Length: 101
Image (cartoon, rainbow, N blue to C red; front, side, top):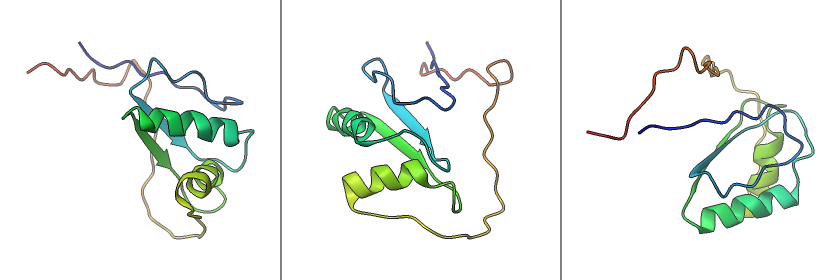
């Protein structure tokens, strides 16, 4: 038993989230992400599922701002040097985690 990760690079909209327990959104500079996607995330959250939204310095905040404004009345902006980099690791290099003890 383990986890399956589907990476969708630059999708026009979110897929059906019914098969997932978590949705991770990495914000970019703009996309076709809109209120229909926010509605999917809102329904997903109401089912007790998890949503992780990652934003970086301006301008990499687009999707986070669409979600934040619609669900939490928040807005992100700024250019703060953090010094950390997040990378997508290929399935070949990733370690398979198990939920068994």
